[in-house]
Length: 137
Image (cartoon, rainbow, N blue to C red; front, side):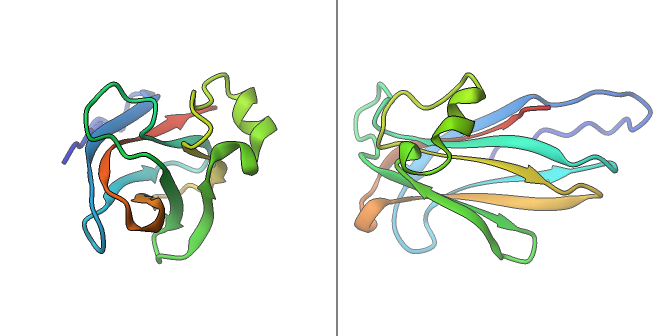
C-alpha cells in the first residue's frame, strides 16, 4: 500500500503523480489505486496501467484498466490504449510506450469525491504491473 496525504489545507499544494508496482493476480487479487479530488475544482487525470514496457521479470503481458467512482460505477475502461482516446492520451505528452498497455483520460468531479483504478490481466493472466495517476491541470 502506498499513501500520500497533505494534512495542511491552508497551503495550495498539489500532488502531480502517484504510482505503485505490484503483482496482478486473479479474482480480488488485482492492482488497485485510489485517488480523491478535494476542493471545488474538477481534476483532469491520466491513469495508466503498464506491464509490457516494464524491465522486470514476470511482467503482466497485457493489462486492462477500469476507472470507477466512489459508488463502484464504471466511469471508463480500456484495453490497449490506442483503441480508445488515442489523441487525448498522446496530447498529455506521456502516453504508454507499448500498445498493449492501457490508459484513460478523464475529468473527475471534485468536492471530496473518490475514485478507484483497477488493473487486471487480459483473460485472467497474471504478472507485475504499474498503475499511475497523473494530475493534468
